Amino acid sequence: MTSMPPDIYVADGNITLFYGSHSERFKKDTLYSSLLAQLVANSTPNTWFASYKKTLSTLFWSLNSFGNRRIKKEPSSVLTLAKIGLSSALREEQLQQLGNAFSIIKQLPDDSPIVKAILNKIQRENVPSANPGNPVAAERTTFTISTLLTIVCKNKTTLSLHISFKSYSAVDITILDQVISQRTILDDPETFLWSTSLLEDKYETVRNQVTGKLGSTVDTHLFHINPTAPIH
Image (tube, rainbow, N blue to C red; front, side):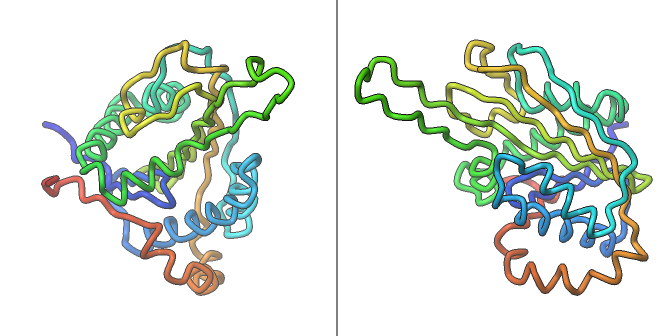
């Protein structure tokens, strides 16, 4: 029997999955605190993940473990890199559920605000410096491809996987599970895996502050995808 797909959210263009059953309060606390930390980190794009982690540590996301790795350059998608980065933390069937979630997202219309949010977040154009003396030698335009996957497990452990690499080409939503050419990728992709647990009793002391700081951004930057609803 096929297991139910995870509950899918997109916060500021980054994908969050809830495996198993969780209370609405816990999901809201996780999503709101993560969204606030992401918005704060946007002001420092070159050290985005470090800023994200720092903010969440003040919101009582308790560290369990942290590690990073370089993955040898080869034809890659977000899914292939995520499976490598999460292989030590998730079982094969859980990794398969990640692929199922990506498939659901890809079924959304191209003009969906969710798709637009993901694409706006997943890549940043790096404009090369001009070389008036030798235009031929000018650098090529590149793109920084980066995304944060947040997976909340049945036992409430949260896995945050940040994936980043540089590419010579812009990407579309198919980057989620369709590989791009190795020749397109500039360097070895890098992943950071951060395992945490939300200290719910302590988070209660800052919940109202988080909600107040977010204000109306929850209406424009946080989306829910019902995995059991038909996609039109």
